[in-house]
Image 1: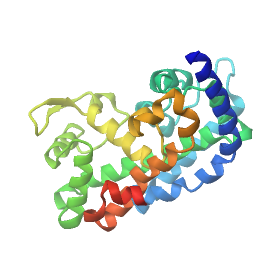
Image 2 (image 1 turned 180 degrees about the vertical axis):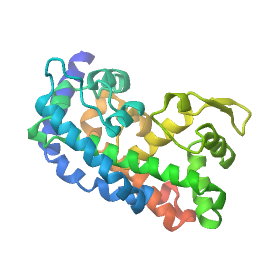
Image 3 (image 1 turned 90 degrees about the vertical axis):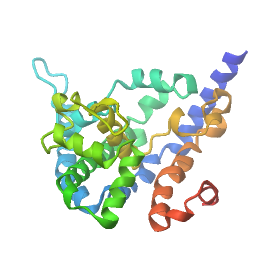
Length: 275
């Protein structure tokens, strides 16, 4: 009985999602507007050529993919998504991340990759690449200017690092491990270790990759069981929760960050709830 009810809810939620989210790509067109708010205009502009290259190679791969004897086209953006764990097989990712939350839906997985949904999945990956590349540029810029940072800029960096479990001292050690270059595609750099400010030996990968993922998902929102209210992961509540994940996540990330920059003392859970 329980499984039958959940299957019925899933069927109904699929119809609802297609009905109400069919033009979600149009509403997602505004996502790039949040990139400069998160990482700065300069870094966004620096990342634009690599984001464009990702799109061009993706189109070519789609048109000419599957040719015998041809090696799959790659790009900096695609490799970056792989390192961050965002280019995995969608079916496997959904099994691991969403199965227990009742979110796995094969129909919607194909639907949002089709012309009917204006290629929402592909567009989201484009925004992810643009954001991640701009974020990497921001981190490299901070690394280059770390010794000269002071005042408000230094405080902003300290806050950014604290959000990702680091201190300025940890960041300096990370920079030294890479000889001044934050090369996220270099496995030797990612697998190198240092002793952090808490006295623990930690890999660069365990700090840098989550930091990059956080920057990316702060712009290209990705509601999952770990970043939304617990009741939204209840399969029996999927009809109620499915259209509320993004507004709630938007309030907890983008809106909260903007408000905190305007007035750090006023950014309370109660205030964000009212927003």
